[in-house]
Image (cartoon, rainbow, N blue to C red; front, side, top):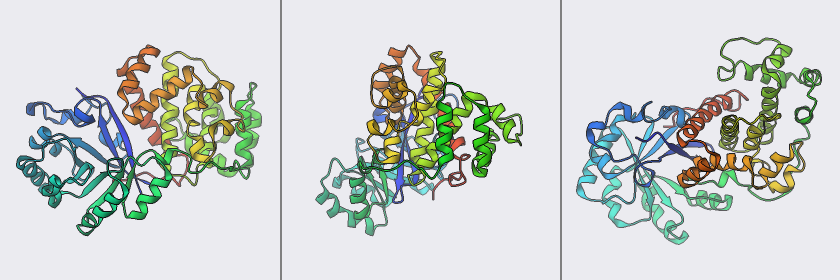
Length: 415
């Protein structure tokens, strides 16, 4: 059984998400696990094993899935939709004639194939006629070796993914070399540590942030701020009429919306609006990752029966990537925002419950299952429940991303 899955974004040259690589907890090297052929039914990828469908996990983007030799030979990829899946061949499989034949058959059925962690070993040349994408491990080959080998693949019209890209400098280097896609967490780190002013042109948002941090919350003052800004009022109604938030009532008036949300939900909404504004020139995936972290940390906080106002678990997840959004050091940045001291300490790395909640989210993102096991034990929360909470956070993040701004449209499977 493999109910546990992590996802790594694959970005294009414009830093938009092209696909997600899905990493399963069970199975060798986080790949689709080796199981008996008679278990290869549709249930393998539906509710009995994954609490979400692939389209929800991958936010309707292409899914890259690692397969080992036995699952390839037994035809397991054919259970999946060839329009939305790329079949990844892991570099540890024996490259014999039986595997080449299986890849040819899968390719003939309309699937795209990718070689994972490629290091230009000639033993893989036999697969090239059937491969659409090659993922180059940038840590296993030096720059000169990569540059020398790329023309062969470019002439064959094979798409190239640079893996383990961890800095913007690396991203720019490999983009200039001709790579098509990039995988790594470079986008979630500050591009350059420099001074960058907070968006002072959005005075209303800063006023709302200040109001939401006050111990004595005033609906009257918040309502007055919204009334001054037609755009914010529109976003509030759009947000609250999202089925993810409200499945029963249609809200048409501003005051009705504020009352319906209530103090806690309104504070979360204000924080989301502020974050979206701060990151408007950044990759959408960075905001999406912040949303998923926020919801997950909130759900963990609820599971631990925390009673925080403002909702600290939510806010620590939401603001955990502020340094990347504003290209500033986190320590100097949080001093400029009206946030709670406990949240500020967690964002700066101080030990405590909020840091542990955030650590769980990061463990899911990086498929660091050992860290997940350790933290779940410390928090006395079951791993199964945590995986369910993370899946719930993904669905919530997908819905909110499509709602908070018309600039974040519903994503579609890439061709």
